[in-house]
Image (cartoon, rainbow, N blue to C red):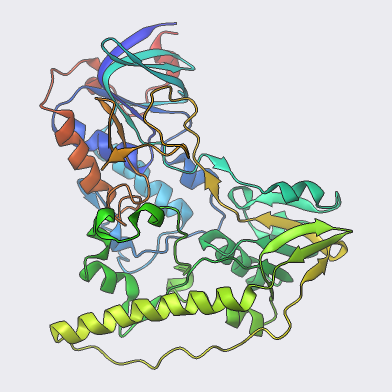
Length: 425
C-alpha cells in the first residue's frame, strides 16, 4: 500500500475534526482528515429517530459557521444535525477521506505514522478528533438476562416500533436513558426505568432557557482547572433535560405519576428476576437538589447584576416512592435498552500519553508527545469543549499551537469527500 505525507493528519470528521480542518485550512496548513465512515457518522448512526439537541440551536457555533436557520431557540433533530455538519463541510471543502479507518498510530523519527485500511500516512503532527464514545458499555449482568428478552444498547435504539411488543426495561437515567424512556412512554409502551445518579436541570427558568442563563454567566467557558474537584468532573454524567417539542423538563417523578415504573439501580438478575437497589429516593432527591443549586446560582447572578426577570416558585416534588419495588419479573419484559454509556477506545494509539485509566494526559489537548493532540473530548478545557458551542475555541488553540502556515500540497486541492479508491491503493 502507498505511503502519503502530510504536515498534519486529523483523525475523525465529526464536529471536532471538521472544526480543526477549518482552522488549518484558514491558515494554509497542509493536512488531511481521515474518517472511517462518513462525515457526521456518529450523529447519523447512533441516535434514535426523535433525537434532538438539548442545547438551543444558537449554541451551534463551529468555526466560521454559526447556526443561521429560522429557529435559533429550537433544538435540531438528528437529521438536521447531520445536514448542519454536511453543509458546514461543504462550506469550505475540507480534505476528507471517507471510508478510511486508522488502525495504528505510532511515533516515528519524523513525527508519526498512521496505518489505515487504505495505506499509511505520515505526518509531523496528528490531531485525534474521534471523541470519547467508541465502544458501547453493556454490564456483565446482561449475560444473565433470560434469552426471550431482546437486548440492545441505546446506540442501537431507533424507535418504539423496532422493539418487540410488550413491556420495556430501560437501564440508566442519563440523557439517553431518560429520553428513550420518554420516547417509549409517549408511544404508549409500558416502561420500567432503572434510575441512576445523573442530575437533572430545568429547561426554562425565570423567562429564559436555562442554557441562556448559564451561557451569560460564563459557565461554558470556565476552565476545568477552576473547579475544586476538576480531577473527577470529567467522569460525571450530564444533566438530563430534553429539547423535544420545543424543549421541556424531564421529571422522572412526573413519569412515575403518569404510569412509568421507577426502580433503583439494577444490581443483578437472578431466578428470572431483575434485582434493584434501594437508592431510588436518594437519587431522585439528588437530581432535584442539583437543579435547585443551578437555580440558586442564577438567582444570585440576576440579583448581582440587577437583571429584570420574572420570579418562579420553587419545585415541589409531584411524586415520592413509597416502598419502591426491589425486583421485577423478567417474564414481563420483552426488551431491555442498556442506556449505560460508552467507553473510549484508544488501543490503536501506540504512543505513551495515557494515564492508568486510558485517558490521554494533556493540557487543553496538547500532550507530552510533541505533535500529538486531542480535540472534542468533554471537558478538554471547558464545559463547552465537547459541545457545538466550545469546540471552536479549542480547535483555534490547537491550530495556533501547531504552528505557522506551511506550503500546501495536493491535499488542500482535494474536493470534498475524496473516495478511498483515489488513494491509489
